Each structure stands twice: as structure tokens, then as C-alpha cells.
Length: 99
Image 1 (cartoon, helix red, strand yellow):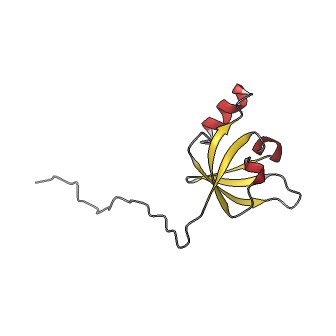
Image 2: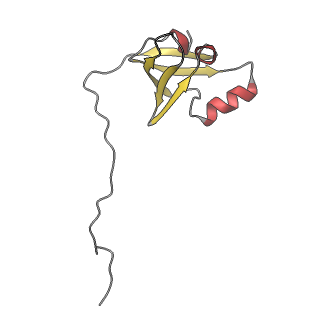
Image 3: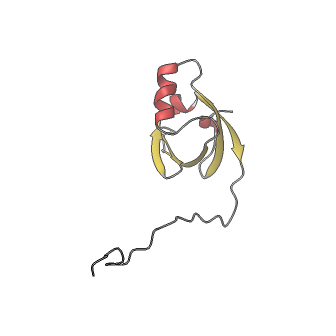
């Protein structure tokens, strides 16, 4: 199965990316599309091209032709999933060491 086979609002895990084209594979890896990473397919344009996907917090658009080069496995999306983000607390003057 390829990324082009995944329907919108679905999740998949990358198995391999552009194995026959090392230059393109390198570009995909730089974007975060490498084996083992989870990808959320958010939207497919009305004419079927491009796809909007999320990898972690990064959004990218990818052509259908390129999506066909990415081998994936389907992963079930857990309902009620909430993403939490750790944020350092900030208190003005907390680091002041004035005497």
C-alpha cells in the first residue's frame, strides 16, 4: 500500500520511501518522511492532487505521483486522542539573582 492509497482523515506508518530514487528519498527524509514515522492524511485536493499530510507538527503538501513512492501501513486512529505539549512556565523575575 502507498501513501496515495490512504484516504483523508486516516493515519499510516511509513515503511519505505522512494527506494529506487535516492535523491528524492533524501528530500523525503529531510521533510520527516522516513520509515517508522506516523503520517496523518488531512486533505486531498478536489482533483486528487496534492495531498496535505501532517508529520508530527509539520504540514506538507505532496503530489500524488510522489505519494505513490512512499510505502505505508494503515494505523487506526484512536478516538479522543489528545496531543499534549510540555510548556515551560514563565515567571518574570524568577531568574533574577539581585541582592
